[in-house]
Amino acid sequence: MGWLDPIECLKAREYLAEGNLVQAAHVLLASKTPDHKAVRQLLLEIQRKLLVEAESQYRAGHLEPSWKLVELAKQCGELPADVLAFVEELNRAVESERRRRAWQQAQLTEAKRLANAGHLDSAIHVLERLSEMSEAKLLQSELCMRRERFRRAIDACRQCLEQGDPHGARRHWEKARELIRDHPEVFALAREIARLSCSESPWGGGGGSVPITQPSGRFILAREALVILDGEIGIGTPRTPGVKLPLLGRIHSRHAVLFRDRRGWQITPCTDKHGRLCLIWVNGEQIGGPRRLASGDEIALGTENLRWSFSLPCPGSLTAVLVATSPASGTIWVGAGPSLRKTILLVDELVIRPHQPAHLVLEALPCEKLRLVWKPQGLCWEVDGGEFLVELPQRTVAAEEAVAHIPSCVVVQGNLSEAESLGRMVAGITGVEPCRIEVEPCERVTSFTGHNIPGGPMMG
Image (cartoon, rainbow, N blue to C red; front, side, top):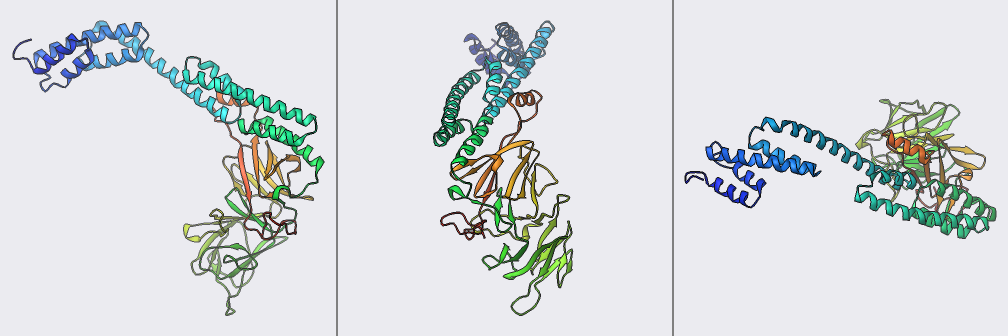
């Protein structure tokens, strides 16, 4: 080293003496005199050493460290021609390794999703191909133990069913459900337990639930919509007698009435305490009496011009949907319940799909269609392209007996076997998880059977 060489050269040679090539290169690359002859010469010397070390790391199978050394060598100056072939080979190997690791991570993510969906066999099958990943090995071990505990609970549940013991079967079923909540066998056993339980006691509002057997009353569905069953619906302010659709906003206590006939729905204004008609506009035209509604009509109420759209989204069904069309349109008052901006006026059926046409769109719905339809025994659940069970406060009900209850929770699962789920995963199609749809009361007033039930969830 010459006595006029930059101080960075001295520091770099000290790092070289220690065998620290990387730090020596960084010192010179940060030099304030990068064009100094001594700096350039020393950088070329360090570059040669970096390339030798990079090739050594590559031969030892350490691709990422080798690649980082080559990238640092590139900063030291133009690479010599005799190493270009090695650098190209290294880049191909690194890119291939990165793709492999990305694939492994995607497989691990998919295995976790399958496990969460209850498809343990499929998840374990995926993890078996990731034997090099420590995280995958640990997860596979955990899932195998979980599957074994689940299998013991399922076997014990079946044994209780064979012995005619629904209560014991329920205890083991709950253990299995806690391990894998939405496994197909959990659904199947729930139906068997329900059938055995029903053979011991008649159908009714067990566990504090109320079956919906008459076309009157209302409930909250999926925390998305207020469902009203009556054919005549008063619109007004909260806590007004006879008002089924209470709205927050500047309207009269009983502002309007929606009523249904064989042709569909009509709306008519009520009168205020001075005998004047309450303000209602349909498609911008103020009305002074009954007005028949067509799908797509816009209804405006009161001095604040609360705007709601009226639609009949499902051809052939008289069930209508009212939706608030702007933030200023107020909300539906349901006490301590969720804030709602949609009302479904259920007549013949209520269709739920992951897309239109539907009375209620739930994108997470894993089946083709779920619907509520009137039958002789009451308002019943039906499903296309899937299966479901109904959870009541103290028991689970088989789908074959699924009269809607208040309160309850409908758990819907698509008809996908583990093999189909694995095939969807291989094809790169995101799996469909089970969907839970809550049916909640608005308040505790009257049951849907027309009888008062002390302590049970009642409906107005």
